[in-house]
Length: 109
Image (cartoon, rainbow, N blue to C red; front, side, top):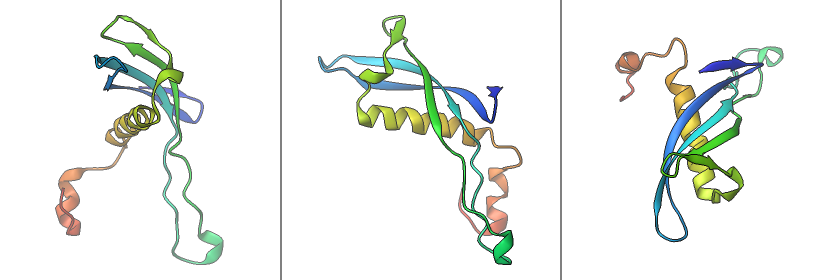
């Protein structure tokens, strides 16, 4: 993970099925802006909408073939999975979140 302006850069892997039925493992590199949840309590002047959480795919590497993969060739479903995988990497890296404390709030891990 590296900082880039107001985004962080992450890598994640997904597997896709090509049109010919072959499965390829892809390594996705992209920028994820930090998600800031909405503040919907308190006086109106202190409330704010949610912002951030955008994902920009920078590079896709086909690990099966050992070559660069054109991100424009990803299907809509594969693109969504790639963005979700990058967001998951960002979520795992969120400072101050400790899943072990979920029980303290009555939430299941």
